[in-house]
Image (cartoon, helix red, strand yellow):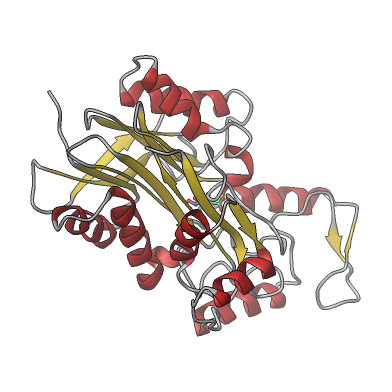
Amino acid sequence: QTSLPLVINTWPFKNATAAAWNTLQSGGSVLDAVETGCARCEMEQCDGSVGYGGSPDESGETTLDAMIMNGDTMEVGAVADLRRIKNAIGVARVVMEHTDHTLLVGESASVFAENMGFIAEDLTTNKSVNIFSQWLKGNCQPNYRKNVFPDPSMSCGPYKPRATLKQKKRMAQHANARSHDTIGMVALDQDGHVAAGTSTNGLTHKVPGRVGDSPIVGAGAYADSSAGGAAATGDGDVMMRFLPSYLAVELMRAGADPSAACKTAISRIKRHYSEFFGAIICANTTGHYGAACNKVPGFSQFHYMVSNSESNTPLLKSVDCF
Ligand code: SD4
């Protein structure tokens, strides 16, 4: 028995789910649904970790990562380290539909977007300026650099390759802090077409140029209309080393039920990084879905949203981390 159509996304980003669901209901494709849903979060700045004005990097700038995947054709469009453009998932879709490329990055991705008609805007807000200036006041303690410390005679950087024990401890704490919530979404229609996508502003105080898992195919998301779709959220630097979305989809193809597939994808990472922060959602071609997350201090339950024919409004779901 099938339970289609279906929209599922990470975190309780209910308006994004509703936007995607309404798109499907009004005849839009699964790609339209994923794009509209993720774009909704970009405009609403979901949790401060999607869209403009969040997660300033070490130079104070907000940069965006996004991807979209068509599970029928296996086409992908993605952008990483995108600057000045708010609608990252929109640019990702244009990369997919108007180029033969998969991933555009940095300044060149922004110039591409501008050329394709996207408006260039400052992605900084009062909030992101505040986050950045607090960090400057705190002596620019590195969040994501290892075995370095800022030159004490400078207000910020250059970073020197050495770390005191105290700094190492502080870095470990930062790495565990949950300061990021990407939207990852999978949509399936009545006929079994699958699409998946992500959008995020990454990590606060990341090293400029850092790209997370979200725009990486098979890491942040994956879709294959002959097996299903998946999307991940969490510590992308670690998670992208394991292609968890690809793994979950392949396990479902081999017959695993979605919850088991998600759990195995998380377990694979846990073997090497027991303390990583992360979660994954997935759905198979019959519209059955599941989720899993890694239990760490302060993160014992993961919330996500589902819309399907069972309800007119998005349903808040949760899974206990293990
Ligand atoms: C990243 N995976 O850039 C994203 C952040 C995230 O929940 O998903 N946070 O690493």
